[in-house]
Image 1 (spheres, one colour):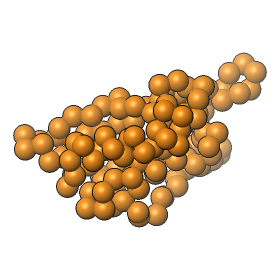
Image 2 (tube, one colour):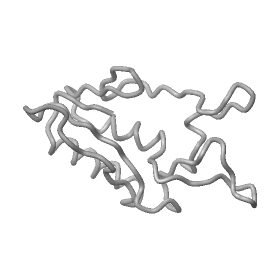
Image 3 (cartoon, helix red, strand yellow):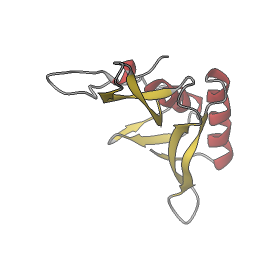
Length: 125
């Protein structure tokens, strides 16, 4: 996601707030400036331990015992809480959409037409 109209410190504070809800299991996979002025940031969230809360499950792969495969990516709920924890002036560009903190979370089909799987159901949250 790209985040503008905020500071590095505000983004780090939002991550700290999210970590209070998810057992300190969330970290940045990517957190860098997208422009020379330092007013736009590229951010990607991941989990430290895929067996803890906030982990995204694969939509298509399962283990031999039928359990879903866990990924290192942060789930839909983590991203929603992270967006809401940012300062109200921030602008978030994610999935081709412009969002603001406090906007409704939009769920989408991450599966297929034959085997639908809503993004919000791909975790243990």
